[in-house]
Length: 152
Image 1 (cartoon, rainbow, N blue to C red):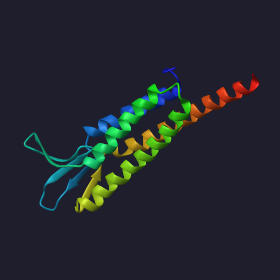
Image 2 (cartoon, helix red, strand yellow; image 1 turned 90 degrees about the vertical axis):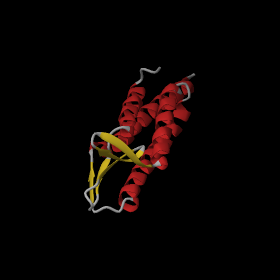
Image 3 (cartoon, rainbow, N blue to C red; image 1 turned 180 degrees about the horizontal axis):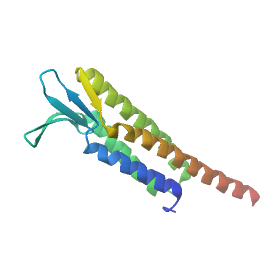
Image 4 (cartoon, rainbow, N blue to C red; image 1 turned 60 degrees about the vertical axis):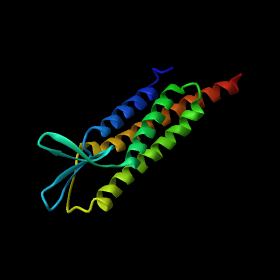
């Protein structure tokens, strides 16, 4: 049952979340000329080709790890569709929370006049859409199984 379309949606969603650990989400430019980048692991600066980790953001890291683990668990819990439905909803909420934390960190913690977001900022939005599509597919399967049980 891993080959269901909702499992594909969940796997693609996982493929959108994992790169956020390694690709910069936002770039922050300070008035002093320093450039910092933010990924799910925290802020870092690249100086002379060397990456210097400036500040770890454990809340973003926790959200990212939790979302990835839940995503894998949802994929392989295909025998319990009701659990999959609940976990899909929780994962959507966690993705929304991660987006909120990203914007909070960028605009409140890093007091900087110049912020430029990169392409990975839309990855959680795409993952939310994919989770919703998976939720609909799982719910449709559950309703079909329930309707077949009524016929017996």
